[in-house]
Each structure stands twice: as C-alpha cells, then as structure tokens.
Image 1 (tube, rainbow, N blue to C red):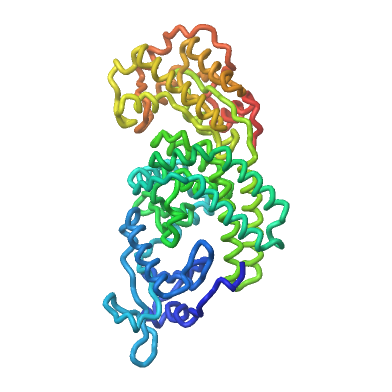
Image 2 (image 1 turned 60 degrees about the vertical axis):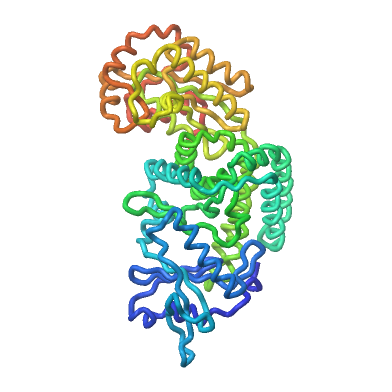
Length: 520
C-alpha cells in the first residue's frame, strides 16, 4: 500500500485551499485522510477527494470526484442536513490562477470539486470526546436510538446473495493485507482467512435470508466515532460512504458492527455494550447476533488495510510508525473476533427498586463475547408486547398473571435464541415466583450453557426512594408497587443474595465475585 495509489498531483489545489489568503486571511486547519483532504476555515469546511485509486475507492478522474462529491452531499443529508451545504468548484481564472468558483462555473474552467459544509466544533466529534473520557452511557443510548432510526428509514435493497457479497469484501481484505507482508505476518493473515471462511460457510444461509428479508439497506458504511458528532445535545451521523455502493449497501448489523468494533478497539467496551443493548431494545433484531463476530472481524480487517494505506500520505516518520502499529493491532483484533467464547446466562432478580437494571448494565460488558452480554429486561419486553412506547404507563391489567406469564415466556425464548447465536444473556426481571426462576434455569440447561442467578435486596425505604427518583424509564413501578411486592410469597430462593445499598462500585465487585467474573 504505497504512493502508487496516488494517480494525480493535487499539490497546487491543496496549497490554494490551505492558504489563509484564499479565505480573506482566516486561519486554516487541515485534516488528512486516505481519501480526502479537509480544510476548516471560520464557520465553513471545504473537502476535496484525493486523486487516488484503490480497489474499493476510485477517485482517479475529475468526473469521478465530482460524482463522489454529489453523492456525499445527497447521502449525508439523510442524517446531517444541517451540515452538508452543497458542492463548490475550484477553477482557474483567465490568468491561470486558482479561485473558488460558483455553482454555475464553466466546466472547462474547473480543476477540482469540493464539498462545502457547515463547520462544527472538533471537540464535539465523538472521537475527541472519547479521548477526553467525555462519552457517557447516555450518549451511547442516544446514539443507538439515532442509528436504529436511520436504519429503519434507510432504503431497503433486498438481495439474494448477501453471503457472496460479504465473502467478496472479506477476500478483498485478505488480498490487500497480503500486499504488505512486512507489516501483516503471513501466519496471522492465514489464520484470519481460515476463520473467516469457516464463519462465512457456517452463516451463509442466515446472511442470504437477512438479505432477502430487508436487513440489507443503504446504510452509512463508515460508522465509527470520527464520523459522529454532538450537535445541540444530540448525536449526528456524518461522512457516510459515497464512493462504493458495495460497502454502503449492506446488512444493518454490519453497519452497526463498525461502531461496536471501534469502541472496543479504544478500550471502551462498556460503551459498546450500551450501544448494542439499546439498539437491540429498539429493533429486536436478535437474529443478527449470530454474525456479529464475523462482521466485527471484517470491520477490523478493513481498518487494518486502511491504516496501512494512510501511511503513504503521512509527512512524519512517527505518524507512519503509529499507523503501522495500529494496523497490526487491528489484524490481531480481526482474528480475535472469530475465536468463539462460551456464552452463559445470568438472571438478575429482586423486587422493584433493588437495582436490577443498573447492575445488569454494569456487568454486561464483562461477559464474553464482545462487546458483552445482551440484557433482556422484562419491563422493556412488556412494553414491546403491548405495542406502546417504553415510557408510557400501562394499566394494571397489563400486569395480570396471564400477561406476566407471556412476558416471561418471551424472555425465555429470546434468551435461548441469543445463547444459541453464541452471545451471553442477562435476564433482568423480578422472578418473584419459584416457577419463573426454575424456567430461566431450564432455558440455560436446554442450550447447555452455564447459569447463575442473583437475588438483589435493599431496605424498603431505599427501594421506594429509587423508584420515586427514576426519570423516564420502562418501569412502571411506584411506591405502592414496592409496598405490594414486599408482601409477595416468593418461596425458597436458592440463588445467592446481594445487598445493593453500598457504594455502586462495591456492589458491582461483589456481583462479579459471586458470578466468578474476573475484574478487569
């Protein structure tokens, strides 16, 4: 992956856009990627496509770069209309000097095209926020909701050969990794190829079925933290792939997998777990979990080859060294996602206000495979079955013995399906009845995985305060509900008991000890 991919000299255009004089003396900041050069000036951004030709991205002619600029604006206005303003030509005037043109400039005068964008604070990009430790679970839940809405509204592109499409991407990755044997060890690439082929063969029928059933859509294609920003307190997706439909028209879970892998790569697995769980609560697309490991692996391999290709446009030796180290780490990660880890089932139970959901979310990232266990929350399932928003209060009839039995049965069935897909599950529910606890234990036994149950406890005043202090939430529990539950006949509880009144971090440590989870 060398400068041979660069097919045209753009130094004069880059120097022109980077010169303060071009912009009335304003300071210019520059960002380089393997496919673009971005100039930030005042409240505007000018972005040109690099004249490069890769197997997956061809900007080798001016016409191709114009088409890519037009597509970038059109596609990104789906999620970020407030950012993408249009396209702008760079022209040569009558004296041969470069100038910013108008939309109606004569085509024969145009030497380059730029995407014109509204500038936003670089500190608001999730990449920068991650580096400062500023990303929260709340950001991730909002982001997951934004992604699920985008996927739901994205154009469906049904195909019959989704497995073949994914195989082609994976094989292209392998071929490009082999181009740099000094960076990518042959034995590691061989292992990646073997494991990838095995996974593709195993899941080919599922991939094809998802392709036919509308799970393949015109997605973002490049969904990682550098392409997400916070505007007016809400996550906004930008910089979607415009240059290769084969990379953008894909399974929605493959789109999501890039975000999950990026968070995991940065050591932010708890945030990745928050994204995955909220996305699943919004979409109920549990079917995709079986191929999530494959998708994360392919995404990591993509990042490995991209990091290697970016070395060709770096000006410092340290930048080259950093990118090569990152590329090698991505290859290791790509192999790791295809190494199966045995799933397990954990039930987190107890009366309302004992802290079940908080604890479930905190221990989920500690369970393999990455990014952690899927949390099945009875409160959310109940609202889903009722067909109402999570925060809408249900009538008492929705909590009848019959309705509750249906909720628990749905939880058991989902748990078994997720476990069979290879992912761990945390079942978050009261489990007040002995029969309910026995049934969740049988769900684990039916799949042949390890089961652990926890019964959480707290003083009644603590439980009452917690339910009264909740904001918008799927739980309908009130102080009256807590009072009624305290009169329940729960029968013999054989699961370990955990008092949740101490410091939150100590409660988590105690739970992990009871579950035999190594503290990271």
